[in-house]
Length: 487
Image 1 (tube, helix red, strand yellow):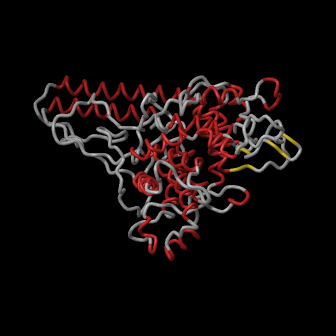
Image 2 (image 1 turned 180 degrees about the horizontal axis):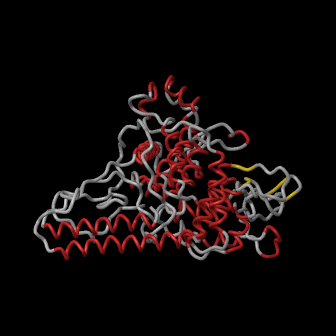
Image 3 (image 1 turned 90 degrees about the vertical axis):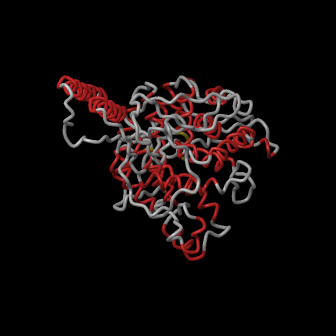
């Protein structure tokens, strides 16, 4: 939620509480219903949680797919769904760090994948674990050691892989660089060189390319690559990483993020959906989920809501899922997949695609930026506060992401990159696994009896003047903050 909206809610609660004290009337807090896209996100997360076995998700050919498991863990952390599964997944990923970021399991030693290491660093922070002691590994130090130094020329700041043999060009891409920026920003100081390299992957139009390399080798920047293909998914990742970098004070990150978000809007289809590049050009839930999440992070509320609406049309429900009703909450990759599932159910062959699609798609429904997952309270269905006199200074309490024994939990902080969104139409069934509820959910505006006009209780007029001063002062504060954000 933007800081201005947090203040608006807080000022509203203070004004209402003051009026309640003046009139002597009990303060009744009426909870607003959860936005439809938030409910849909939790439904999707509940389904995805049910796909985990002993803390991991399987791959198409292996009993554990650690990359997919990390995606699932991030998705569950974004929604706050199923704390036991999140805790188990965090523990399992921590036990299998080298299974994911090396070839050790294949008997090939001496190789460390830079992108996988950066993604592990990010996942540890999002799950509330200690990234400096995750499964016995200092992921922050390891990621920093894989950042190219000054002697790398125009590749300075790039996340790279380490190998003892000549394995050809580095396979790192914009996803990898974005995870490096996100993970480093969330775990300590963020090197400006790492941000600068990510910004160089942005073309003048605003979009980002997926690969920094061409057939002739690494190119210095996106604009210096003739015919560079701009990619929606990469742009969505880069926008979110740069927003996190901007919060960390990185130079140029905010402007690049805004420009990237503007380009994303130009790529949105009439129905709110997005497509990627190459084989993913057609409208799909993976691209729509990432783009919608990025637009929400950048404050593009209406565009993010349109993306959420498109995602909701791809979600199975108990009432309209047909042969796949038992998998209510899952999100199809595209309309063809949805139609096939309704007719035949989700087959064993197709289930892997549904897991991957749902893990990314629900991010566009939850609309919690990658830079804030695990830091801000996840969106939850508000629970009404019983009638009575409420304390306007009560702080929300959340369970947040599970924190494994001996790990540090990030401290929640204010954000200007997670705006509340208007409800998006959906037919999603109620979540089967409830996310932790907050005592006073962000965005819930309390209401008190008699607010249609000034209460006639015989209270002294000076009390009303105090209320007026509170509201006027709050307005001035918001105006000043608004100007500061504009700069």
